[in-house]
Amino acid sequence: MKVLFLNGPNLNLLGTRQPEIYGTTTLAEIEAGIRKQAENRTEVEFRQSNDEGDLVTWVQESPGEADVIVINAAGYTHTSVALRDAISATNVPVVEVHLSNIHAREEFRHNSLIAPVCQGQICGFGVNSYHLALESALSLKLTD
Image (cartoon, rainbow, N blue to C red; front, side):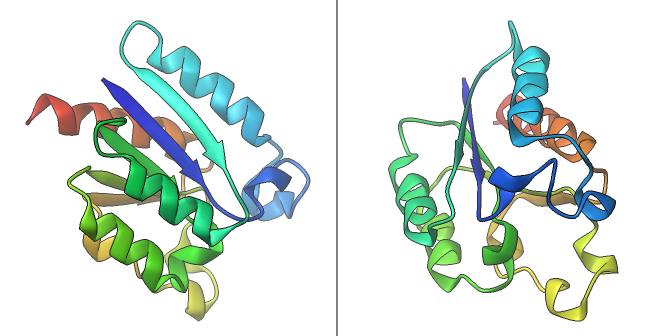
């Protein structure tokens, strides 16, 4: 089994970008923690891009390469019809993840365009959101 973690724009700045909202843990540190959690359980792959097209392409290429996608689409969560369409066009289950609680932030962040085509959404638990997302991804494949 393989879980593909896709991370969108500005997540490469984690650790320094708005630490009062996103914390001080870097994306590399999140990845290391997930790799440790996944050890002897599943293969994980992490990718990050500030380019919407990269995320769309990676989702489109995921059938046959990944069993589940965990995606933090960041700002594209609220704007990308293209990403939503790519997710709905594949048969790969997707778990949406966010460090902050998007429903408790600015109103424009309350609406996720991708949520309706994902298996579920985890948000508001900081770094633990990623750990919960991995457990959710694993449970999706156990129930297939």
